[in-house]
Image (spheres, rainbow over the protein chains, first blue to last red):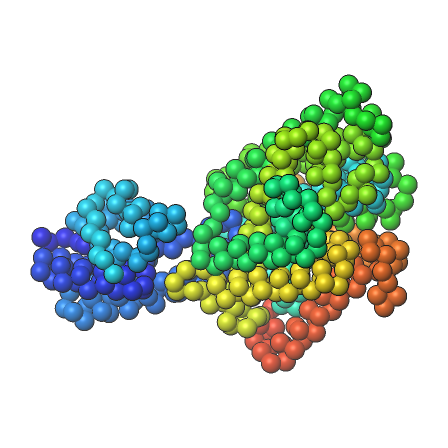
Length: 137
Length: 456
């Protein structure tokens, strides 16, 4: 399977598990791995500009580390920063790239808390047009 | 609020409410245009720094932070009080300890929610505001119908046109203190304009939604003030100045419909707590990134993607201020609203001037830009400066405060307001002596075309 695998990556423990699993998968399938970091400051709070910059810097650092790790494993990697909420951002990126799969880590939230707080993997499963693989942390 | 305004200007409260909106409208024009030139540039702190240099900018940012900390105490007080009123625990609502405890719990909850990044969406805000507006409209409608039907009780007066006439207010002092208090009512309205701008990407005029929302906002205040005043006269408003709506709500709507009003006040107080803490933390973040505040405040939590440290610090400062103030005296809490008005007048005034100064080379290019970018913000700035100065003079009289106390021979609101500003100047100078980098910046003017996302 040539093509791309989008990896939802935010630097959390769950995301690190997902990175391991996605890297092995990409290696076996000969696919390119695209770690994606999503962020979106709401305009409700005002002073969006500097907040956005701060998030972008954080994202670049986190996603840079992910990219280094992927490439260190001998896999082609192409990290992306996406300015959108995590679930729709990843879903959209996957469609844009024509990716074969989205890999995310479970956030480690208990089901009820996840349902109330809106766990990203759960949302992703419902909105993504691309198949989603959830790796348990 | 309404009670405090009524206390200041007697029956002309409706007039003050619409008149005091004008400078706010002018300042909102300033925000709108500054936001349009560089949407990434944030609000008062960044803009004033750009247009008027680092010292004015730092003080503007400081005033925002202080105003937000002060208002948190008042919001928490309302949220605490109305939590008890909602459940009919009127006894507990009388207890300062109980109300303050629940108020502090509200601040903790809203700080936690903001820290972990559950932001009320613009839609949730609209829903909460919409619900509040409907409840207030209901209150005003029923009250007015009862007044005209002669069913409102002995204190009722039929509304007169003179209520809406600002020239009927007999003293300039009463008008300015009324405007100072009313400035607080419209505070934050400017963010509505900029949010609208971002979300709807409108062309050259402020979005229709923003104008519509504005008219509703002003309309609802004026109508509610008229209705409340007509129903019971000015006296109950002044006597229950801490809490006009729950005092009149039962009389107007009757059980259990008066609960609608309580829910509306509670939800909007809770929502306001978040819309207060969110921008404060972001202003602190902006200032920290510009090296005007300690760096720690500019760190975004990798886990929650929010300025967690700044948010928690602001929550903690609010709690200290709120609990400390109620320990001293509950009356001081109401005095602090007048002090809050001074803060808002200060940084809104700065923002108005900043817009005119920043665009000074563009002003004569068209009539539209002359009026909207030049005259309106400048006028707003001048009016707010006048209100600031005149209020300072009036508030110097200890008799004019809610508490009637005298601190250092002057009224507590002035001590609180000016005290915070002087503390700011002191902190700024200390910061400058340790970290001079930010203060080496120079003011800029607008250059065509605006550099996209460029930062000064």
